[in-house]
Structure formats: structure tokens, C-alpha cells
Image (cartoon, rainbow, N blue to C red; front, side, top):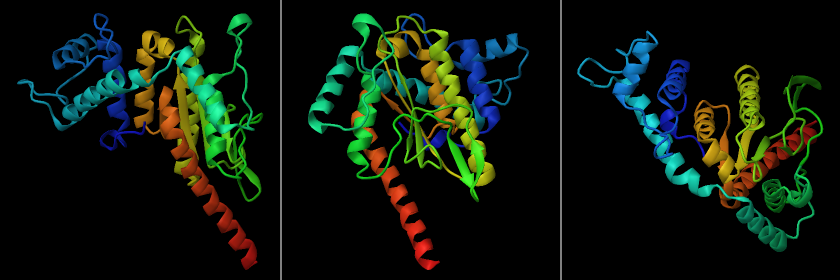
Length: 293
């Protein structure tokens, strides 16, 4: 899932409104368990209680301003994409294991297939991570790839560190140093509650995105940032409000793309080939520079 162009490059004030309205009116409808689309009268009521003005959203006759129209268009979009598309992409443990085993049998991978962090009868392969690794390997050709970075992502300039991210990521192509792209994986097939560890994972991705945004704005260096997540119960039954936050984060520009559940099977090969194309361009440029010298 990529950002809808209509809502990219909105102001910080726009996203402040999205967050405030979502918090005060509610991300979800408790009765239907669907993502909520706020109504204007709800927004007015909640803003009045917070001593906030709504004249810039709608006039006294409830006619939306341009800002207000764009705001409610976004709420409709967010609810529709999550209720009708993302929800159906998310897999449970059994479905993920089936797709993992199908890929393993078809691709015969040489890449790492890590185990999860569970114990006892829950101990098994990390299904989503395994699928990600296999699909990157199958679509990267002979290019190098770091499936398990053990150091911080670093971008260099003139043989010196230019920026180093605050935390490690789950994968980097072709390397954790000067990567074309990095990815983070949030798979939760065994959790029974939406705990602080899951919530912290969302904010860690936000931190990475903010650092990468600053890198591109100040230094002109682009590193593609991909978020891949799955676990129907955790994300949909328990964490729908965090799915809203992730869609917001995508449109704020802190993630370039989010892959939900079984979408990994169709979209990740395309991403891998796109990144491989960028890598080939860099290699050709470097070789031309050496030949010219």
C-alpha cells in the first residue's frame, strides 16, 4: 500500500487535526468494530469541549471549507482502505504458515529463515520474516542483501558517517551502510493482547521515518523505508487504532510503503525488483566513474 496522492504533502496542522479528532471522537466504532468516520457535529462538540475553534473546518451552516473537505475526505479514505482492504489482507498463524511452506517448497531458498521468539509448542519459523527473505532473494538476482543487520544503518559522505539511525532495522539492501532501502517487520501471530511492545514498535518506525525525512531534506539522500506487518488478531481485533496511525504515518511521509499480510506475496517481488534497478544504476555509475579516472 502506497500513500494516496491526494493526502501527501499536507501541512503539519492538517495532521494535528487528524490526530486530535481521531483521539477525541474515537478511531473505531465500538458497536460495529469498524474504523470510524467522524461526523461534523461530533468534531464540533469535541472541539468545543477542548475550547478549540472549528470555523476553519465549516461555517455556521455546516458548509465545509476546502480544509474541512480535505480533512473529511481523508477520514473516509482511511476508513474505507482499512475496513475493506487491509482487514482482508491480514493473515492468522495457520494461513501464514501455509504460504510460508508453499514459498519454501517452490523457491528452495538459501537465505536465512529465522525462528520466532516463542517457546514450547509455539516455537516455529518466523513466517512473515521468512517470506520476506525468500522473496527478496528470489527477486534480487546476484545482488548482495543484509537479511539480519547487526549494526545501525549508516549513510556516509566523503568516507565519513553523514547520518546514523538510532536503532537497528530488520533488513537492508544491499547493505546497512548506504542502503537503497531498509525494511521493518512486525509479525504477531501468537499475541493475545495489544501490549506496549507492539505499540512501541509503531513508534520506533515513526522515529526511523523522521530521521530518514531529515536525511533527505537536509542532505538530499533518499533511503526507501518499507514497513511489513501481519497478524489478524493483533492488528485488527486489538490494534485497529494503530492501523489508523500507520496509515497516517504513511501519508505523512515517514514510511514509503506498508505491506499488509498476504500482500507480501504480490507486492514485495515488485519492490525487490525496483530496488534492484536502483542498485544496478548505482553500480553502473560507480563503474563509469572508475573507468573515467
